[in-house]
Length: 450
Image (cartoon, rainbow, N blue to C red; front, top):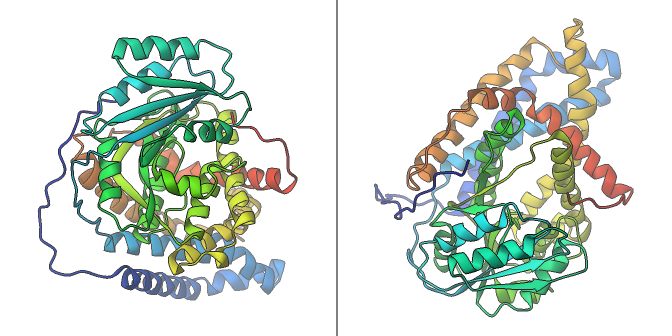
């Protein structure tokens, strides 16, 4: 079932801002709130630390609790406080007309590519949209489907063939043929809201000159398929979108994702295109940031993608994302980033392996022990975390509903079971999967894209 995504008009500014907080002020206020929360957490956890120290030693107790409570709590408090201070800048140019090229790398996408092209055709963008599809060694009827769809839709779709396997090879092949000032990458199974291209270009045109890319907002297209896709719907709607907003607020979105993002063509070419990496979009974005350029996020530029429907496919995708993060860290260290905000944002990624390993090796076993009456790591006090989690998700939900979905004439689907499972078990799945991705990169195991 395809999402019902009508075209939209730009949201009306309902109130005039009476005050403005500089980004630097928001950054430090967010950290003050997070630090206050962490101090309070440490005070409450003193009995917990003492009890655990009797079993594993005091230093080990501190390492465990820091990894599963102190740092995650600090990061969550910083996220929520920052988003409460966030005010998306008003678009200066609402209807840009600059020509733009859309690059789509395809491999055996005969079932989806025609629909993807149809949604490109239905964009309300006033400028010229050129479409380039790069066939990366498909063995099915992908090419004939592209040809038939382009004729039916009366679209001028240019098709190129790249026989070296790897999405980065395909995108770089297409980049060589881009003549427009802006280029958008789009996955072959991703459908664009009719205003998606307009909002991406409008955000770029309304931004400072040093902004070189704008990440779009990617949501789930196939959420009704099974319980697994229902859970992922909330991850994209709340988790990923909120992280993107946080990073966009501090002018350093860490991933202008290949599924749907806009780039200045000259900037991509200046850093030699997409790198030879399993997380090619991550490394590319970090190269932008190292140049002192900024990467924004536009929540109103919405696209709907297909998420993994099986657990094995999910493991491959998310371990690939974790591996791509490590690739970025290996090439560009947080302290090599020129801006304060990007130092911090990439620095949080630097400690993610520690948090994921802590959650996998301590929290999950601690939860199992709690079922047998051993509350060494997970105990009754842990239940106090649930209200805080629900409050933070509630804040994020209201923003998405009122500031994104309503202006786009979309409705938030009632997916109660998916939300419950997302809150209760999702992190217990994500952390071990991420650890597996770190292991793959550490031992340089064979890359698997699908």
